[in-house]
Length: 223
Image 1 (cartoon, rainbow, N blue to C red):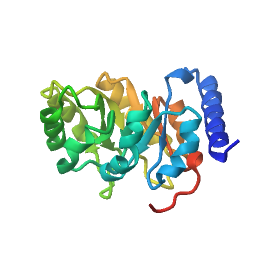
Image 2: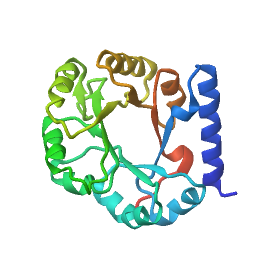
Image 3: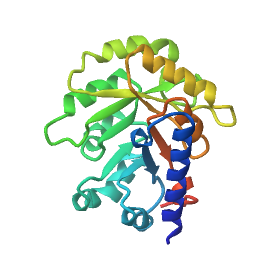
């Protein structure tokens, strides 16, 4: 058994245990395997396992790696988990089925304008800068209600829920709990939160989409 397959099994078992402990349905937890900086050869073992949900940070890297594979694997989904530049919107909506990092009105406008029947994009998350870090993208907590209200003007965009990343080296639970509260306040059902080091805490606090990279794929290398 390839090490990636064993890692995937281990992560799924941990998801199952956490869901059992916190009365969550494991079938409602989407495991996004983040493959940024892994080359096409590194993707083969996990595709061979039958896993078909992946995350990438950059449009150009995703295009180079996944366009051909999207034609081969019928149910393959690639989600964008990194920041999106407005000049990359047209390319992004032709590769990604979901974008987790919408954080500006300009991005909403661009997506709404560019979507067509041929676009792969189906859903988006609104990124919340829940810790108010200047180095991170995302809508401020105090602005999220008005931003979501304004987003209703973009009728072609389906906003699934909220996404966040807690600050490193801090207890993530307070940030995950706050995102859950914000989502409920705005009648949003889905939460994209939790990565390799904290996905169990995220599941306990309501995550529906977790973004796990190295815990499945192993150490990253540059491509």
